[in-house]
Image (spheres, rainbow, N blue to C red):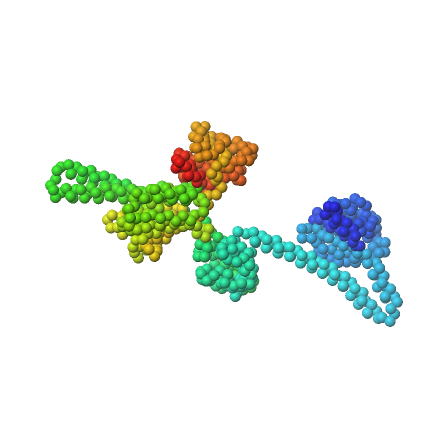
Length: 628
């Protein structure tokens, strides 16, 4: 039996009449006793019956006795119903029977009313008054008042119980909403003990407990984190709101916190959010802006300096052809070497300040590191060993070209520090699900104090005239473009350079399967199809977003979507990120990096710049191919 039928059967067993009208004054529920008590036709006890029609029927039947102006009487009852308030009353009907009427509003609008026939109870009260001659009139009167008061009290208790139920329901709904927030919401009292928490602290600061109500904030956060937040907590307890950020050393997460004083009683409301990814993005944006400013400042100087060097080189070359004396030739040769070195320095400056951007694509560290060893080994002396310690887990989104340049730079620096023998160790590992940490250590003498303080500064060098001072600066530039950080230190055996890149997993790209290739240029589509089949994929093709979506709906075996951004029709490849969100989607484009559509795409998924070869496509998909 349906639940509604079971509920109605239960209501019909109640000895009292019950009605529920909604906010539009239409009947939602009533029981059989209601129809019996007031002798109502079926039309007025059917769901949707109007309250006004019921009152009009009762007036016409004489329920309320003689009524001089029926329409005014009905309108008044309807107005009272619209502004309904809890009440309890007793009245004698036209048929001589007495009923009590108890009403209570509902939180979603409307009200519930219970009608109880108290004729027998009133008769007993009257009988008591008639036959108890020994009882004083005052006792009888007070007994009747007490009886009525008890009934009113019972009605009030019912209303309070309903209010308590509503408050409990509201509290549960509020708590559920708070627990769904992507932030930790809490309150501590004046002593620092938690009085409320939405149990989201572990999501913001991994490693912390979730059940913290009653615990002290110092014990919950730990000594290191508590030292950072304590001044802000005290400021909030003193009545000043505090908004700040700090790094949680235990989890390497960047936390933004808001401490707000409780206006009602001593205590502090706390809102904490994990802004690690936002901070990494800000660092990358700041580095890009700094590079743009540096480019503007140096471009003009470099242009003029290049012209001067060109003049110097030309004049010195001409001077050398004039057969000067033996004393002049060394000076001419030294001048030519200095000018050429100046030109090389200008190229290095152009590399740093020129247009560069972080273009991440899926990268599996194993094959990448194998290629790095192949490139670096010929530059190392016979007595030097390059050791790889790969502790990575899967594929990551990384700009392989910039990372390779940086690691080669560090390996060559380590080679110069070690001399003719020693060991260079490159380790890659995940750090607390926040960073991908790449460490390069050597067995050389280590960094000096001044190198530890200024090693990342442009033009700082300890190699004298042989160094440009731009090597570590380029590594710093690459890492900052990715939103990461660089740390210099000395290990037990020598120098240590630690790169921390934002941990971005490149999940979802299969190594084989059916690829949906979306490209509106027929020739380009044929070329990319050949590359994909050469990598072991099967390919189906489309030239527009609607065509691609139709294929995706009819082919459940599609494992990957590779699409150009600019396509045939009004929609771009970006639309498939939303319409085919259940599939891994990767984009390619010939648009410049600063094009708005290119920027929008790169913010959501990896983008492969055109033109590219099979090896580039393999690296982009995180694969190892013979071409690569």
